[in-house]
Amino acid sequence: QVQLVESGGGSVQAGGSLKLSCQASGYRPLCRYDMKWYRQAPGKEREFVATIDRGGRLTYADSVKGRFTVSQDNAKNTMYLQMNSLSPQDTATYYCVTRRGGTWSGCLPEQDYWGQGTQVTVSS
Image (cartoon, rainbow, N blue to C red):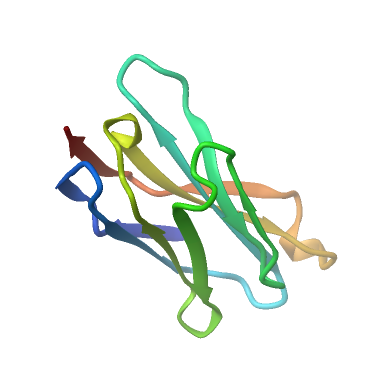
C-alpha cells in the first residue's frame, strides 16, 4: 500500500520561504508514479499547485509560477516543493498526491494516493 508522508510545513511571515517534502513508500515495481502538490485554504476548494512526472516534466499553477519550485529525488521516491516569496494567500493545507499508472496490468487501474497534509501559514 502506498503511503505518503509530508513534512516541512509551518508558520512564516510574508516574503519568507518554506520547503515541503513528501516521501512515498510502497511503490510497485514497473509502475509509473507521477507526483503532484495540491492545497486547500479554509473555506475554499482544493486547488492544484504543481506536478512533476517521472521524466521530470514540470507544471505549475499560474498563482505560484516563478515563486514555487517542485523537484524530486527518484531514488528516494521523494518530492519537494520550495516555496519562496510567500504571501498570506498561500496559507493552506498542502497535500502530496501520487498517481499510479503504467502499462503493466499490476499498475492498473490508475489510482491516486493522498498524504495527510501539512499546514502552511503565512502572516502579513
